[in-house]
Image (cartoon, rainbow, N blue to C red):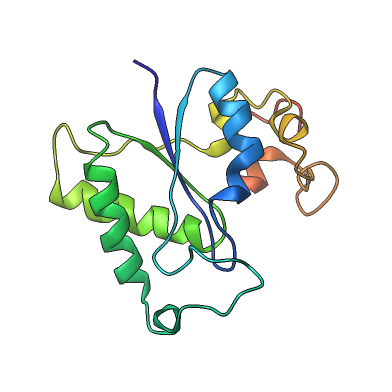
Length: 147
């Protein structure tokens, strides 16, 4: 059975942010699930749902926890921006509440594809190469191959 990657988008975007990553990881044999945070299912040019202004991080974490429970597998959590923070909150909550078969596993995103050209495959800018970080250890990027 393929590992499942549960992809959580950030604020002011939607599951479409993961389209290129999903394609790459599915080609690597992963099962990818993209979610839509509560009150984010809208046209980006539209008027936001007024509940968006009152939703807390814990509200989002609760909704995500319910969705992950329905997967029936221990997913790898991957988050973008606020979704990264939610992945950490969700992982902590589930590790304490659901020990045993529901405990989540952790991997750094760049380790999932063995660091072999992942950013080039997705079309994402590679900020680790001569940009914000000079080496993989500073960026938390695993082995540092192809960075």
